[in-house]
Amino acid sequence: MDLKSRWGRLSRSPVFNGYALISPTALYAILLLAAPLATVVYLSFQTDGAGVREVIHDFTLKNYFEAWTDPIYRSIMSRSLFVSIMVTLATVVTAFPVAYFVSFHVASNKKSLWLFLITIPFWTSYLVRVFLWKVILGYNGVINSGLKSLGVINDPLTWINVNIGAVVVTLAHAYAPFAILPIFVALEKIDRSFLEAGSDLGESALMTFRRVTLPLAMPGVVAAVLIVFIPTVGDYVTPDIIGGGKIPLIANVIQKQLLAIDNSPLGSAIAVSAMLIVGAISAGFVLANGRFLRVKK
Amino acid sequence: MKTKGTGLRLYTIIYLAFLYAPIILLPMFAFNDGTIISFPLKGFTTKWFGLMADKDQLHQAVINSLIVAASVAMLSSILAIFAARASTRFQFPGKSGIMAMIMLPLVLPEMIVAMAILVILLQMGVTLGLITIILGQTLVCTPFAIAILSAAFQSLDQSLEEAAYDLGEGKISTFRLIILPLVLPGIISSLLICFTISMDEFIIAAFLGGTKATLPVYIYSQLRFPKEIPVIMAVATCLVAVSICLLIIAEYFRRRGVAKTGGKDSGGFL
Image: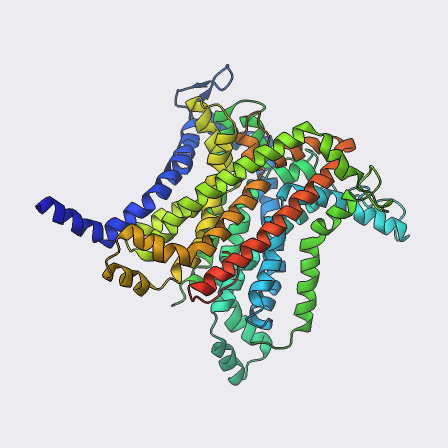
Protein backbone atom coordinates (compact mmCIF):
# COMPACT_ATOMS: atom_id res chain seq x y z
CA MET A 1 0.00 0.00 0.00
CA ASP A 2 2.72 2.39 1.05
CA LEU A 3 4.84 1.26 -1.89
CA LYS A 4 1.95 1.79 -4.24
CA SER A 5 1.25 5.33 -3.13
CA ARG A 6 4.93 6.16 -3.30
CA TRP A 7 4.99 4.83 -6.86
CA GLY A 8 1.90 6.87 -7.61
CA ARG A 9 3.56 10.03 -6.37
CA LEU A 10 6.76 9.23 -8.26
CA SER A 11 4.98 8.57 -11.51
CA ARG A 12 3.25 11.93 -11.26
CA SER A 13 6.40 13.91 -10.64
CA PRO A 14 7.58 15.90 -13.64
CA VAL A 15 11.21 14.91 -13.03
CA PHE A 16 10.43 11.20 -13.18
CA ASN A 17 8.19 11.64 -16.21
CA GLY A 18 10.82 13.71 -17.97
CA TYR A 19 13.54 11.13 -17.46
CA ALA A 20 11.26 8.23 -18.36
CA LEU A 21 10.15 9.91 -21.58
CA ILE A 22 13.55 11.01 -22.73
CA SER A 23 15.36 7.78 -21.84
CA PRO A 24 14.77 5.84 -25.10
CA THR A 25 16.13 8.67 -27.24
CA ALA A 26 18.93 9.44 -24.80
CA LEU A 27 19.90 5.78 -24.63
CA TYR A 28 19.98 5.60 -28.41
CA ALA A 29 22.26 8.62 -28.57
CA ILE A 30 24.53 7.14 -25.89
CA LEU A 31 24.80 3.78 -27.67
CA LEU A 32 25.21 5.11 -31.20
CA LEU A 33 26.95 8.41 -30.62
CA ALA A 34 28.67 8.73 -27.25
CA ALA A 35 29.98 5.16 -27.13
CA PRO A 36 31.27 5.20 -30.74
CA LEU A 37 32.94 8.58 -30.23
CA ALA A 38 34.56 7.27 -27.04
CA THR A 39 35.77 4.24 -29.01
CA VAL A 40 37.36 6.51 -31.61
CA VAL A 41 39.20 8.39 -28.87
CA TYR A 42 40.28 5.07 -27.32
CA LEU A 43 41.43 3.61 -30.65
CA SER A 44 43.48 6.70 -31.39
CA PHE A 45 45.77 5.68 -28.51
CA GLN A 46 46.19 2.09 -29.72
CA THR A 47 48.57 0.42 -32.17
CA ASP A 48 47.58 -0.77 -35.61
CA GLY A 49 47.91 -4.52 -36.11
CA ALA A 50 49.08 -6.27 -39.27
CA GLY A 51 45.83 -8.13 -39.88
CA VAL A 52 42.67 -6.70 -41.41
CA ARG A 53 40.83 -4.58 -38.82
CA GLU A 54 43.35 -5.78 -36.24
CA VAL A 55 44.16 -3.39 -33.43
CA ILE A 56 46.78 -4.13 -30.80
CA HIS A 57 45.51 -2.87 -27.46
CA ASP A 58 48.66 -1.22 -26.33
CA PHE A 59 48.63 2.42 -25.22
CA THR A 60 50.69 4.68 -27.43
CA LEU A 61 50.95 8.32 -28.45
CA LYS A 62 52.58 7.36 -31.74
CA ASN A 63 49.46 8.05 -33.82
CA TYR A 64 49.17 11.59 -32.52
CA PHE A 65 52.88 12.12 -33.04
CA GLU A 66 52.47 11.03 -36.66
CA ALA A 67 49.29 13.03 -37.18
CA TRP A 68 50.86 16.24 -35.87
CA THR A 69 54.36 15.98 -37.35
CA ASP A 70 53.92 14.39 -40.77
CA PRO A 71 54.23 17.31 -43.23
CA ILE A 72 51.61 15.80 -45.54
CA TYR A 73 48.96 15.68 -42.83
CA ARG A 74 49.93 19.12 -41.62
CA SER A 75 49.57 20.67 -45.05
CA ILE A 76 46.28 18.88 -45.72
CA MET A 77 44.96 19.92 -42.31
CA SER A 78 45.84 23.56 -42.91
CA ARG A 79 44.31 23.39 -46.39
CA SER A 80 41.15 21.91 -44.86
CA LEU A 81 40.98 24.69 -42.30
CA PHE A 82 41.54 27.28 -45.01
CA VAL A 83 38.72 25.79 -47.11
CA SER A 84 36.36 25.60 -44.11
CA ILE A 85 37.10 29.20 -43.10
CA MET A 86 36.59 30.41 -46.67
CA VAL A 87 33.35 28.44 -46.98
CA THR A 88 32.10 29.81 -43.66
CA LEU A 89 32.99 33.37 -44.59
CA ALA A 90 31.44 33.08 -48.06
CA THR A 91 28.31 31.36 -46.79
CA VAL A 92 27.59 33.66 -43.86
CA VAL A 93 28.38 36.90 -45.71
CA THR A 94 26.23 35.97 -48.72
CA ALA A 95 23.46 34.52 -46.53
CA PHE A 96 23.05 37.54 -44.24
CA PRO A 97 21.33 39.81 -46.80
CA VAL A 98 18.96 36.96 -47.71
CA ALA A 99 18.00 36.42 -44.07
CA TYR A 100 17.69 40.19 -43.63
CA PHE A 101 15.46 40.49 -46.67
CA VAL A 102 13.13 37.71 -45.56
CA SER A 103 12.93 39.02 -42.00
CA PHE A 104 12.52 42.74 -42.74
CA HIS A 105 11.06 43.07 -46.21
CA VAL A 106 8.72 40.13 -46.62
CA ALA A 107 5.13 40.22 -45.37
CA SER A 108 4.84 37.96 -42.33
CA ASN A 109 2.38 35.55 -43.97
CA LYS A 110 4.84 34.98 -46.83
CA LYS A 111 7.91 34.40 -44.69
CA SER A 112 7.51 30.66 -44.27
CA LEU A 113 7.04 30.30 -48.04
CA TRP A 114 10.35 32.06 -48.67
CA LEU A 115 12.10 29.94 -46.06
CA PHE A 116 10.64 26.82 -47.61
CA LEU A 117 11.93 27.88 -51.03
CA ILE A 118 15.37 28.44 -49.52
CA THR A 119 15.48 25.04 -47.80
CA ILE A 120 14.19 22.85 -50.68
CA PRO A 121 17.53 22.50 -52.48
CA PHE A 122 19.18 21.63 -49.19
CA TRP A 123 16.98 18.57 -48.71
CA THR A 124 17.59 17.17 -52.17
CA SER A 125 20.43 14.76 -52.89
CA TYR A 126 23.69 16.29 -51.78
CA LEU A 127 25.67 13.95 -54.00
CA VAL A 128 23.76 14.96 -57.10
CA ARG A 129 24.15 18.65 -56.29
CA VAL A 130 27.90 18.28 -55.87
CA PHE A 131 28.16 16.44 -59.16
CA LEU A 132 26.13 19.13 -60.92
CA TRP A 133 28.55 21.77 -59.65
CA LYS A 134 31.33 19.82 -61.28
CA VAL A 135 29.26 19.93 -64.48
CA ILE A 136 28.71 23.66 -64.09
CA LEU A 137 32.29 24.61 -63.23
CA GLY A 138 34.14 21.87 -65.15
CA TYR A 139 36.64 22.19 -68.01
CA ASN A 140 33.89 21.61 -70.60
CA GLY A 141 31.24 22.67 -68.13
CA VAL A 142 28.23 24.89 -68.40
CA ILE A 143 30.09 28.14 -67.74
CA ASN A 144 32.97 27.38 -70.08
CA SER A 145 30.87 26.07 -72.95
CA GLY A 146 28.40 28.92 -72.45
CA LEU A 147 31.11 31.58 -72.56
CA LYS A 148 32.72 29.85 -75.55
CA SER A 149 29.53 29.75 -77.58
CA LEU A 150 28.98 33.43 -76.81
CA GLY A 151 32.47 34.10 -78.08
CA VAL A 152 33.66 35.65 -74.82
CA ILE A 153 36.54 33.19 -74.47
CA ASN A 154 38.39 30.92 -76.88
CA ASP A 155 39.89 28.44 -74.45
CA PRO A 156 38.08 27.07 -71.41
CA LEU A 157 38.87 28.88 -68.20
CA THR A 158 40.84 26.58 -65.96
CA TRP A 159 40.81 28.68 -62.82
CA ILE A 160 37.16 27.93 -62.08
CA ASN A 161 37.43 24.14 -62.04
CA VAL A 162 39.29 21.46 -60.10
CA ASN A 163 40.56 23.88 -57.51
CA ILE A 164 39.85 25.08 -54.04
CA GLY A 165 37.55 27.82 -55.34
CA ALA A 166 35.27 25.24 -56.92
CA VAL A 167 35.20 23.28 -53.66
CA VAL A 168 34.36 26.48 -51.75
CA VAL A 169 31.50 27.38 -54.12
CA THR A 170 30.05 23.89 -53.90
CA LEU A 171 30.22 23.77 -50.12
CA ALA A 172 28.84 27.30 -49.77
CA HIS A 173 25.89 26.12 -51.84
CA ALA A 174 25.42 23.01 -49.71
CA TYR A 175 25.40 24.86 -46.38
CA ALA A 176 23.46 27.99 -47.41
CA PRO A 177 20.23 27.21 -45.48
CA PHE A 178 22.25 26.34 -42.38
CA ALA A 179 23.55 29.90 -42.43
CA ILE A 180 20.33 31.64 -43.42
CA LEU A 181 18.01 30.05 -40.83
CA PRO A 182 19.86 30.95 -37.58
CA ILE A 183 20.46 34.51 -38.79
CA PHE A 184 16.78 34.79 -39.76
CA VAL A 185 15.69 33.57 -36.32
CA ALA A 186 17.94 36.15 -34.61
CA LEU A 187 16.67 38.95 -36.85
CA GLU A 188 13.07 37.96 -36.17
CA LYS A 189 13.63 38.39 -32.44
CA ILE A 190 14.75 42.00 -32.79
CA ASP A 191 12.20 44.38 -31.36
CA ARG A 192 11.34 46.64 -34.29
CA SER A 193 10.81 49.60 -31.97
CA PHE A 194 14.58 49.64 -31.30
CA LEU A 195 15.10 50.49 -34.95
CA GLU A 196 12.53 53.26 -34.79
CA ALA A 197 14.21 54.56 -31.67
CA GLY A 198 17.48 54.59 -33.57
CA SER A 199 16.08 56.65 -36.40
CA ASP A 200 14.12 58.92 -34.01
CA LEU A 201 17.37 59.71 -32.26
CA GLY A 202 18.79 60.85 -35.57
CA GLU A 203 20.84 57.86 -36.62
CA SER A 204 21.06 57.18 -40.32
CA ALA A 205 19.73 53.85 -41.61
CA LEU A 206 23.28 52.56 -42.00
CA MET A 207 24.26 53.60 -38.47
CA THR A 208 21.09 52.03 -37.05
CA PHE A 209 21.98 48.83 -38.84
CA ARG A 210 25.54 48.90 -37.55
CA ARG A 211 24.72 49.86 -33.98
CA VAL A 212 21.38 48.16 -33.40
CA THR A 213 20.55 45.46 -35.95
CA LEU A 214 23.95 43.88 -36.39
CA PRO A 215 24.83 43.50 -32.68
CA LEU A 216 21.39 42.03 -31.98
CA ALA A 217 21.77 39.65 -34.93
CA MET A 218 25.18 38.44 -33.74
CA PRO A 219 23.88 35.38 -31.82
CA GLY A 220 22.43 34.16 -35.12
CA VAL A 221 25.62 34.94 -36.99
CA VAL A 222 27.69 33.05 -34.41
CA ALA A 223 25.35 30.05 -34.65
CA ALA A 224 25.53 30.20 -38.45
CA VAL A 225 29.33 30.29 -38.36
CA LEU A 226 29.52 27.24 -36.10
CA ILE A 227 26.89 25.24 -37.95
CA VAL A 228 28.72 25.80 -41.24
CA PHE A 229 32.33 25.69 -40.06
CA ILE A 230 32.24 22.46 -38.04
CA PRO A 231 30.53 20.13 -40.55
CA THR A 232 32.51 21.37 -43.57
CA VAL A 233 35.74 20.07 -42.03
CA GLY A 234 34.29 16.56 -42.31
CA ASP A 235 33.29 16.76 -45.94
CA TYR A 236 34.99 14.26 -48.19
CA VAL A 237 32.51 13.96 -51.05
CA THR A 238 33.03 17.45 -52.45
CA PRO A 239 36.84 17.32 -52.73
CA ASP A 240 36.48 13.81 -54.12
CA ILE A 241 34.03 14.70 -56.88
CA ILE A 242 35.02 18.30 -57.62
CA GLY A 243 38.75 17.96 -57.09
CA GLY A 244 38.91 14.51 -58.64
CA GLY A 245 41.10 13.41 -55.73
CA LYS A 246 43.75 16.00 -56.63
CA ILE A 247 43.07 18.28 -53.68
CA PRO A 248 42.38 15.96 -50.75
CA LEU A 249 41.06 17.50 -47.55
CA ILE A 250 41.47 16.08 -44.06
CA ALA A 251 38.26 14.04 -44.30
CA ASN A 252 39.63 12.25 -47.38
CA VAL A 253 42.73 11.32 -45.39
CA ILE A 254 40.63 10.00 -42.50
CA GLN A 255 38.42 8.01 -44.85
CA LYS A 256 41.45 6.52 -46.62
CA GLN A 257 43.19 5.56 -43.37
CA LEU A 258 40.03 3.96 -42.11
CA LEU A 259 38.94 2.04 -45.20
CA ALA A 260 41.62 1.64 -47.89
CA ILE A 261 44.76 1.67 -45.73
CA ASP A 262 43.00 -0.05 -42.81
CA ASN A 263 44.83 1.86 -40.10
CA SER A 264 41.96 2.84 -37.83
CA PRO A 265 44.16 4.01 -34.93
CA LEU A 266 45.93 6.57 -37.13
CA GLY A 267 42.63 7.48 -38.82
CA SER A 268 41.07 7.98 -35.37
CA ALA A 269 43.98 10.09 -34.18
CA ILE A 270 43.71 12.36 -37.23
CA ALA A 271 39.94 12.61 -36.75
CA VAL A 272 40.27 13.45 -33.04
CA SER A 273 42.99 16.00 -33.80
CA ALA A 274 40.87 17.61 -36.52
CA MET A 275 37.86 17.83 -34.21
CA LEU A 276 40.00 19.28 -31.41
CA ILE A 277 41.39 21.97 -33.70
CA VAL A 278 37.92 22.76 -35.03
CA GLY A 279 36.52 22.75 -31.50
CA ALA A 280 39.24 25.08 -30.26
CA ILE A 281 38.72 27.53 -33.14
CA SER A 282 34.95 27.44 -32.57
CA ALA A 283 35.34 28.01 -28.83
CA GLY A 284 37.70 30.90 -29.51
CA PHE A 285 35.19 32.40 -31.91
CA VAL A 286 32.36 32.10 -29.40
CA LEU A 287 34.49 33.69 -26.66
CA ALA A 288 35.55 36.53 -28.96
CA ASN A 289 31.87 37.29 -29.57
CA GLY A 290 30.85 36.74 -25.97
CA ARG A 291 29.66 40.29 -25.44
CA PHE A 292 27.02 39.86 -28.16
CA LEU A 293 25.81 36.58 -26.74
CA ARG A 294 25.20 37.92 -23.23
CA VAL A 295 22.29 40.02 -24.41
CA LYS A 296 19.50 40.02 -21.85
CA LYS A 297 16.37 38.30 -22.97
CA MET B 1 6.78 45.13 -41.64
CA LYS B 2 7.10 45.62 -45.35
CA THR B 3 9.23 48.38 -46.70
CA LYS B 4 11.32 49.14 -49.73
CA GLY B 5 14.20 46.87 -50.46
CA THR B 6 14.37 46.42 -54.21
CA GLY B 7 18.11 45.86 -54.14
CA LEU B 8 17.78 43.24 -51.43
CA ARG B 9 14.94 41.56 -53.27
CA LEU B 10 16.99 41.37 -56.45
CA TYR B 11 19.94 39.98 -54.51
CA THR B 12 17.75 37.35 -52.86
CA ILE B 13 16.33 36.29 -56.22
CA ILE B 14 19.84 35.94 -57.66
CA TYR B 15 20.80 33.96 -54.57
CA LEU B 16 17.81 31.67 -55.07
CA ALA B 17 18.90 31.17 -58.68
CA PHE B 18 22.32 30.11 -57.34
CA LEU B 19 20.62 27.71 -54.92
CA TYR B 20 18.44 26.19 -57.63
CA ALA B 21 21.04 26.12 -60.44
CA PRO B 22 21.97 22.43 -60.01
CA ILE B 23 18.35 21.31 -59.67
CA ILE B 24 17.31 23.22 -62.79
CA LEU B 25 20.23 21.93 -64.86
CA LEU B 26 19.70 18.32 -63.82
CA PRO B 27 16.55 17.56 -65.86
CA MET B 28 18.02 19.47 -68.83
CA PHE B 29 20.80 16.91 -69.05
CA ALA B 30 18.52 13.99 -68.22
CA PHE B 31 16.36 14.78 -71.27
CA ASN B 32 19.34 15.72 -73.46
CA ASP B 33 20.00 13.49 -76.47
CA GLY B 34 23.76 13.35 -76.04
CA THR B 35 26.22 11.28 -74.04
CA ILE B 36 28.34 14.21 -72.93
CA ILE B 37 27.05 16.41 -70.12
CA SER B 38 27.67 19.86 -71.59
CA PHE B 39 26.08 22.66 -73.54
CA PRO B 40 24.85 23.10 -76.22
CA LEU B 41 22.02 20.61 -75.68
CA LYS B 42 21.52 18.15 -78.52
CA GLY B 43 17.78 17.54 -78.54
CA PHE B 44 14.99 16.05 -76.49
CA THR B 45 14.95 12.37 -75.59
CA THR B 46 13.49 10.14 -72.91
CA LYS B 47 15.75 7.20 -73.74
CA TRP B 48 17.87 7.62 -70.60
CA PHE B 49 14.75 7.11 -68.51
CA GLY B 50 13.95 4.02 -70.60
CA LEU B 51 17.42 2.61 -69.94
CA MET B 52 16.73 2.69 -66.20
CA ALA B 53 14.47 -0.33 -66.68
CA ASP B 54 17.43 -2.58 -67.66
CA LYS B 55 19.64 -1.91 -64.66
CA ASP B 56 19.21 -4.67 -62.10
CA GLN B 57 21.68 -3.12 -59.67
CA LEU B 58 19.70 0.10 -59.80
CA HIS B 59 16.47 -1.72 -58.97
CA GLN B 60 18.11 -3.42 -56.01
CA ALA B 61 19.48 -0.07 -54.83
CA VAL B 62 16.03 1.52 -55.03
CA ILE B 63 14.51 -1.34 -53.02
CA ASN B 64 17.29 -1.05 -50.44
CA SER B 65 16.78 2.71 -50.21
CA LEU B 66 13.03 2.34 -49.72
CA ILE B 67 13.50 -0.22 -46.95
CA VAL B 68 16.11 1.93 -45.22
CA ALA B 69 14.21 5.21 -45.63
CA ALA B 70 10.91 3.78 -44.35
CA SER B 71 12.63 2.24 -41.31
CA VAL B 72 14.64 5.36 -40.55
CA ALA B 73 11.55 7.56 -40.84
CA MET B 74 9.63 5.36 -38.40
CA LEU B 75 12.46 4.90 -35.89
CA SER B 76 13.64 8.49 -35.77
CA SER B 77 10.12 9.89 -35.56
CA ILE B 78 9.32 7.58 -32.63
CA LEU B 79 12.55 8.53 -30.85
CA ALA B 80 11.80 12.17 -31.59
CA ILE B 81 8.28 11.97 -30.16
CA PHE B 82 9.75 10.84 -26.83
CA ALA B 83 12.42 13.53 -26.78
CA ALA B 84 10.20 16.35 -28.04
CA ARG B 85 7.45 15.51 -25.56
CA ALA B 86 9.91 15.23 -22.67
CA SER B 87 11.67 18.47 -23.47
CA THR B 88 8.56 20.57 -24.09
CA ARG B 89 6.38 19.25 -21.24
CA PHE B 90 8.68 18.47 -18.31
CA GLN B 91 11.45 20.20 -16.43
CA PHE B 92 14.16 17.95 -15.05
CA PRO B 93 17.80 18.36 -14.06
CA GLY B 94 20.30 17.77 -16.85
CA LYS B 95 17.67 18.34 -19.55
CA SER B 96 19.72 20.74 -21.63
CA GLY B 97 22.75 18.46 -21.46
CA ILE B 98 20.79 15.41 -22.57
CA MET B 99 19.10 17.36 -25.36
CA ALA B 100 22.45 18.73 -26.48
CA MET B 101 23.79 15.19 -26.80
CA ILE B 102 20.74 14.07 -28.79
CA MET B 103 20.94 17.12 -31.09
CA LEU B 104 24.73 16.86 -31.50
CA PRO B 105 24.64 14.98 -34.86
CA LEU B 106 23.19 18.17 -36.34
CA VAL B 107 26.51 19.98 -35.95
CA LEU B 108 28.99 17.10 -36.02
CA PRO B 109 30.47 16.33 -39.42
CA GLU B 110 28.45 13.40 -40.73
CA MET B 111 31.64 11.64 -41.61
CA ILE B 112 32.82 11.67 -37.99
CA VAL B 113 29.51 10.12 -36.92
CA ALA B 114 29.79 7.52 -39.70
CA MET B 115 33.38 6.57 -38.88
CA ALA B 116 32.71 6.36 -35.16
CA ILE B 117 29.80 3.96 -35.68
CA LEU B 118 31.82 1.99 -38.24
CA VAL B 119 34.73 1.61 -35.86
CA ILE B 120 32.59 0.36 -32.98
CA LEU B 121 30.61 -2.02 -35.21
CA LEU B 122 33.78 -3.53 -36.64
CA GLN B 123 35.28 -3.90 -33.18
CA MET B 124 32.12 -5.72 -32.12
CA GLY B 125 32.28 -7.90 -35.23
CA VAL B 126 28.87 -6.82 -36.57
CA THR B 127 28.25 -7.56 -40.26
CA LEU B 128 27.52 -4.40 -42.20
CA GLY B 129 24.29 -4.17 -44.13
CA LEU B 130 20.98 -2.39 -44.36
CA ILE B 131 20.39 -2.64 -40.61
CA THR B 132 23.60 -0.83 -39.79
CA ILE B 133 22.70 1.92 -42.29
CA ILE B 134 19.30 2.25 -40.58
CA LEU B 135 20.93 2.53 -37.15
CA GLY B 136 23.34 5.24 -38.32
CA GLN B 137 20.86 7.29 -40.32
CA THR B 138 18.32 7.20 -37.49
CA LEU B 139 20.87 8.94 -35.28
CA VAL B 140 21.30 11.74 -37.84
CA CYS B 141 17.59 12.10 -38.66
CA THR B 142 16.35 12.21 -35.06
CA PRO B 143 17.48 15.83 -34.42
CA PHE B 144 15.61 17.04 -37.52
CA ALA B 145 12.51 15.14 -36.40
CA ILE B 146 12.84 16.66 -32.92
CA ALA B 147 13.10 20.17 -34.40
CA ILE B 148 9.83 19.62 -36.28
CA LEU B 149 8.00 17.85 -33.45
CA SER B 150 9.10 20.26 -30.72
CA ALA B 151 7.28 23.01 -32.58
CA ALA B 152 4.16 20.86 -32.65
CA PHE B 153 4.36 19.88 -28.97
CA GLN B 154 5.37 23.36 -27.84
CA SER B 155 2.15 24.97 -28.99
CA LEU B 156 0.02 22.32 -27.31
CA ASP B 157 -2.39 23.71 -24.73
CA GLN B 158 -1.72 21.93 -21.44
CA SER B 159 -5.25 22.54 -20.14
CA LEU B 160 -6.68 20.15 -22.76
CA GLU B 161 -4.60 17.40 -21.28
CA GLU B 162 -5.59 18.33 -17.72
CA ALA B 163 -9.23 18.30 -18.75
CA ALA B 164 -8.82 14.74 -20.00
CA TYR B 165 -7.25 13.68 -16.68
CA ASP B 166 -10.08 15.34 -14.75
CA LEU B 167 -12.59 13.45 -16.84
CA GLY B 168 -10.95 10.23 -15.72
CA GLU B 169 -8.72 9.32 -18.65
CA GLY B 170 -5.38 7.67 -17.93
CA LYS B 171 -2.02 8.80 -19.17
CA ILE B 172 -1.92 6.58 -22.23
CA SER B 173 -5.49 7.17 -23.33
CA THR B 174 -5.00 10.93 -22.88
CA PHE B 175 -1.99 10.77 -25.15
CA ARG B 176 -3.90 8.71 -27.70
CA LEU B 177 -7.14 10.71 -27.60
CA ILE B 178 -5.95 14.27 -27.06
CA ILE B 179 -2.27 14.78 -27.78
CA LEU B 180 -1.73 12.44 -30.70
CA PRO B 181 -4.49 13.84 -32.93
CA LEU B 182 -3.21 17.37 -32.31
CA VAL B 183 0.41 16.60 -33.14
CA LEU B 184 -0.37 14.11 -35.92
CA PRO B 185 0.34 16.59 -38.74
CA GLY B 186 3.73 17.25 -37.13
CA ILE B 187 4.42 13.52 -36.97
CA ILE B 188 3.53 13.06 -40.64
CA SER B 189 5.77 15.98 -41.55
CA SER B 190 8.60 14.46 -39.53
CA LEU B 191 8.13 11.04 -41.16
CA LEU B 192 8.31 12.57 -44.63
CA ILE B 193 11.34 14.75 -43.87
CA CYS B 194 13.24 11.82 -42.34
CA PHE B 195 12.30 9.65 -45.31
CA THR B 196 13.68 12.29 -47.67
CA ILE B 197 16.90 12.79 -45.71
CA SER B 198 17.47 9.04 -45.60
CA MET B 199 16.74 8.60 -49.33
CA ASP B 200 19.35 11.23 -50.19
CA GLU B 201 21.90 10.42 -47.50
CA PHE B 202 25.22 9.20 -48.85
CA ILE B 203 28.05 9.28 -46.29
CA ILE B 204 26.57 7.02 -43.62
CA ALA B 205 25.17 4.65 -46.24
CA ALA B 206 28.60 4.38 -47.86
CA PHE B 207 30.44 3.77 -44.57
CA LEU B 208 27.97 1.42 -42.92
CA GLY B 209 26.46 -0.38 -45.90
CA GLY B 210 29.14 -3.00 -46.47
CA THR B 211 28.24 -4.65 -49.77
CA LYS B 212 24.66 -3.34 -49.73
CA ALA B 213 24.16 -0.20 -51.80
CA THR B 214 21.41 2.38 -51.37
CA LEU B 215 20.46 4.66 -54.26
CA PRO B 216 22.99 7.44 -53.50
CA VAL B 217 25.76 4.85 -53.06
CA TYR B 218 24.81 3.35 -56.43
CA ILE B 219 24.81 6.81 -58.03
CA TYR B 220 28.24 7.53 -56.58
CA SER B 221 29.65 4.25 -57.89
CA GLN B 222 28.38 5.06 -61.40
CA LEU B 223 29.73 8.62 -61.52
CA ARG B 224 33.14 7.16 -62.41
CA PHE B 225 31.86 5.84 -65.73
CA PRO B 226 31.28 8.70 -68.22
CA LYS B 227 29.11 6.38 -70.36
CA GLU B 228 26.68 5.87 -67.46
CA ILE B 229 26.29 9.55 -66.56
CA PRO B 230 23.22 10.34 -68.71
CA VAL B 231 21.31 7.45 -67.11
CA ILE B 232 22.47 8.64 -63.69
CA MET B 233 21.16 12.11 -64.54
CA ALA B 234 17.78 10.48 -65.28
CA VAL B 235 17.89 8.52 -62.00
CA ALA B 236 18.86 11.68 -60.08
CA THR B 237 16.04 13.64 -61.74
CA CYS B 238 13.54 11.06 -60.47
CA LEU B 239 15.14 11.14 -57.00
CA VAL B 240 15.03 14.94 -56.80
CA ALA B 241 11.46 15.02 -58.12
CA VAL B 242 10.33 12.52 -55.47
CA SER B 243 12.19 14.46 -52.77
CA ILE B 244 10.58 17.75 -53.73
CA CYS B 245 7.10 16.19 -53.78
CA LEU B 246 7.64 14.67 -50.33
CA LEU B 247 8.96 17.99 -49.01
CA ILE B 248 5.94 19.91 -50.28
CA ILE B 249 3.60 17.41 -48.59
CA ALA B 250 5.70 17.59 -45.42
CA GLU B 251 5.55 21.39 -45.40
CA TYR B 252 1.78 21.25 -45.85
CA PHE B 253 1.42 18.99 -42.80
CA ARG B 254 3.90 21.00 -40.76
CA ARG B 255 1.87 24.16 -41.30
CA ARG B 256 -1.38 22.38 -40.59
CA GLY B 257 0.10 21.02 -37.39
CA VAL B 258 1.16 24.44 -36.20
CA ALA B 259 -2.23 25.90 -37.11
CA LYS B 260 -4.11 23.05 -35.42
CA THR B 261 -2.40 23.49 -32.06
CA GLY B 262 -2.92 27.22 -32.28
CA GLY B 263 0.74 28.15 -32.54
CA LYS B 264 2.27 30.93 -34.55
CA ASP B 265 4.08 29.81 -37.67
CA SER B 266 7.70 30.71 -37.14
CA GLY B 267 8.52 29.26 -40.53
CA GLY B 268 11.35 26.88 -41.29
CA PHE B 269 12.45 23.75 -39.54
CA LEU B 270 15.35 24.82 -37.39
